[in-house]
Image (tube, rainbow, N blue to C red; front, side, top):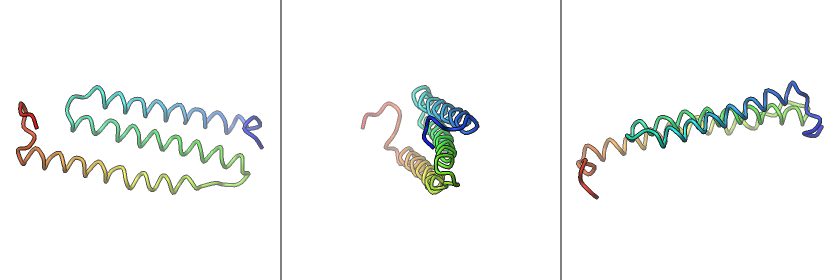
Length: 112
């Protein structure tokens, strides 16, 4: 089965998930540009990109399973990796920002 022969029952949900994933990633990127404080900036891309990548991975599972004719769940490994690393990275960035502001190295009006 090629991409041209994909059933509409698979192609339409996959297309909707890809569009939703792209929109979520776009909202996360716009949040990064729009917000002016670091703590607000870190939230929008983390949520938007994680949910956007999840939508893309589910769409990939649907189409890969339809093309192969059997359940393909390789994307679950990517999902687990993403769900484990994204929050940890965010927490480390937030802790570094808190440590930097508490130590006095990041005071308003001062240049590094």
